Length: 353
Image (tube, rainbow, N blue to C red; front, side, top):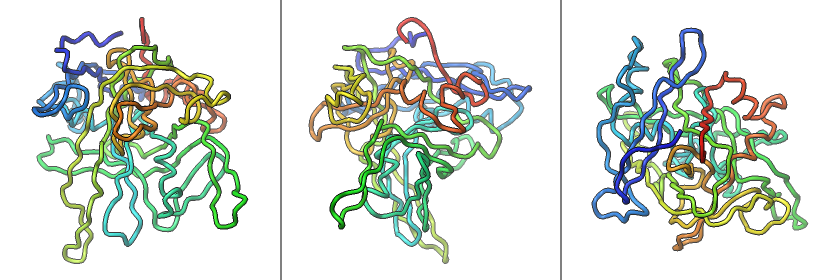
C-alpha cells in the first residue's frame, strides 16, 4: 500500500488512517486518505508550514457517535495534530508551561513515541524530579508531563486536552559520576521512549500513525514533522484561577533524504546518536525532537527525530524497528501488542514499505 496521491514537487503527501472501534470491541481502520501538505506562501519547499483546508477522511462516516463523527473531518492541520502532539512539562507554581519537544500516537489506546532525551529533559535540566524503577520513569513533586491534543473545530470552540504521561519506558543504563558534585548520567540504548496516555474520555480512538519496521534506504525521501521552536505557554491568573490562554501551535514539515543507515551503532558507535539510527539531509530546528520521520512516500513512519546540527541541513533519526522488540509490559514488547490486535497499532505492509 503506497501513498499514490497526485501532488506537485513542492508538496508532501501523508497517508492517514481513520480508526474506529467495531461493535465487538476491536479496533479497526475504517478508512484512509492521503493528505497533501502544500507550503504556505513565503516558505521554501524543504521546510515549511503548510496550508490547511477542509478534509473528509471518509465518504461513509457510518457512526451515531457524534464524537467519533467529529474525528472524521476537519482542517488538514487538525487531522495531523490529532496524531502529532507537542510534549509539555509544568511544575506547580511556575508561570508558564514548558514546550520541550514533539511526540506522536502509535495506538488507539494511547501509546505514543517521543525521543528519550525529551522524556529526560526535566532530569537533565534540573527543573523536576523523576522516579526510576528499572526502565520505567514516573514524575514527582508537582511535575506534570504529557502532550496537548486539540479539540475538533466542529465543537464550535477552540481548546485542547492535556494527556499526562501515565507510564513511560526508556532503555539504557544509569552510571554514577566519579565527581561528587555531578549527577548520574544516563547512557541511552536508543533515543526512543514509549509513553502511555489515558484513553479518549469520549470512548473514541486515539488516531495512530502508520508504522513500518523496515529501515530507510539510502536516497529515500524523508519527511519529518514537529513543533519547531514552539514557545513556552504563559499562564494567566483570572478571578483566582490559573488559565491557559490561546497559544501558537504550528506544525512544520522538513523534507530531505536518507543518507546512511547505522544499524550496528549500538556496538560500533559510528555516530553520536545512540543505538540503531540513520542520518538524513534536512533542517531540524529545536523542539522537533521526538517527531515522526515518514518514509515510503509518506505512507509510513520509519523513525523518530533525534538530533541535528544547528544551522545545517543534517539530522539524525532513531530507527523504529528495533525498539518495537524491547520489553515493555510484563515482558511483552510493542511488537507483541501490535500482533495481538488489541491496541490498534497500524503496521502497514506492501512493496517498499
